[in-house]
Amino acid sequence: MKQEEKIHQLQIAEQGMQQLLMQKQTFQTQLMEIESAQEEMKNSDAVYKVVGNLMLKSKKEEVEKELKEKNEIISLRLKNIERQEEAAQEKVKKIREELLQGIREKEKK
Image 1 (tube, rainbow, N blue to C red):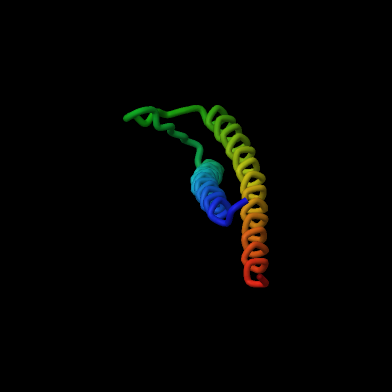
Image 2 (image 1 turned 60 degrees about the vertical axis):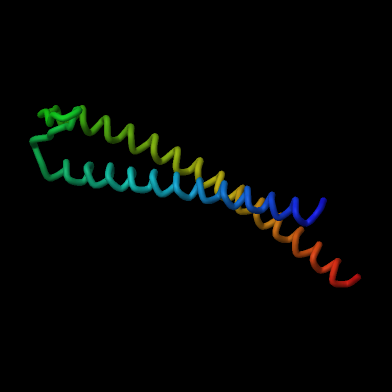
């Protein structure tokens, strides 16, 4: 495979990694917000939930259950993104090594 093709593959793989990192950041932010809300609920008896443009008083147990479910879903998504990120990093590493090997072989000639 030509060096130009390898470089193109590397660029695509790095762009994919960037997208994964942005998704990971989004999920991490959501997870922090959920955990913060869960912590605040421990100190409060009255719980309100935002629905559209309204803030409605809600049952604490229902909101706790909802937040727990969201936490679990986001955590699973985050783990999935992290696995994808590891695979992408390995792919980038492999392509870089192949590029370097090609450069070394050209220098020997």
